[in-house]
Image (cartoon, rainbow, N blue to C red; front, side, top):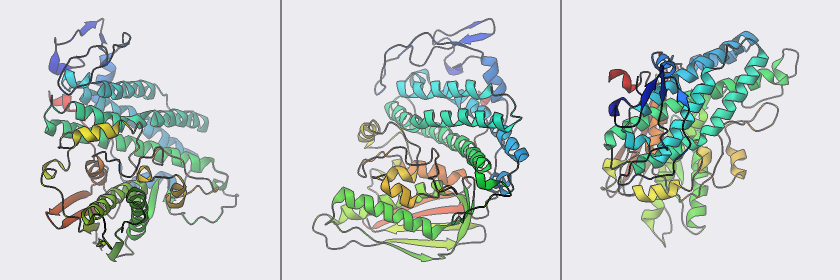
Length: 458
């Protein structure tokens, strides 16, 4: 099977004894308006297409928040190894589907240097992860965790490089198709990081001194965590924490004399639900930051006060709904059609320049913070041994508060929909915006995956 089926014969691709020589995306550059060019690389290695085909034929096995907590509730060696082998089989399967999706892109897109970078990272990870043998001991698991950690760290460049590639290729591919590709790729990326980081957290728990029955477990105010899943996530606390962080960022951006709107909460303030806290922090943080910026910039210089950001929390039998309302004048008419797009919009060139300043991104609320001191204060939790919880979903990079990347809303929607939730926005031009975030309350919804590569239908 050809790596780029839509362009058979378009490039120098040829079979050889059952193996495929893939032209490295950076080896041949096709000039195109808006598409960056780069120098050539060394000859790429031979790769067996049959191996990727085998993994693409496999279906990913979605998991729910409730299932994620199952392994960690009563953590034994047997459950730890079961978790490890689930991750071991799932990661190469999920990444194989996304490699195949990239292979079906127009050749001029996949040869973009940013897309090429992501493609090479994915293939390298696929080759490394698929070769891991069955995990039969705790030592095997520790060795596997090192592989996972290195891969997660290496892939922190994926989001900004993808975003830059999409913006550079906006004139050579329909925006609807590009946005669909981005949503699928990012949702799959979240899924891989969730299961990988959950297993890393469970391994850390298993190896901690307090895990053993005779060990004295210190008091832990954050004891409702199972791995990365917070079983009693409180919407009010998340909004308050994210609101204070967003207000601090606004004060740094606009100066101490500028009035910053308060965040006022009402509704069912005691609503709790199981969730991955960093996901919720990212969504709520982006929405509050957008609202605060809109209100401040609408008031202009010389304003004495600013209308508050009103947050309503509504608890239903199966959902929790968070409405965030501001009086920032609404979304400008020229931006409204491109609100959820990664690839189109009148500010795309400015966004591209800003993305060049962000080499790594985990897509977390911590990346909205300006100084690292506030990370420790508002971090989601700490280890039971007192040290900070270390994961890729933490403050791995910072950006100035007025550095706009144009990815906040579409990325927030991807996170919201991942656990079968939703994110919508209603703009009243000249008045303000109402954003509606709906979250599944019971934790029994499977992650929303694109389990079949689009090439299967070709």
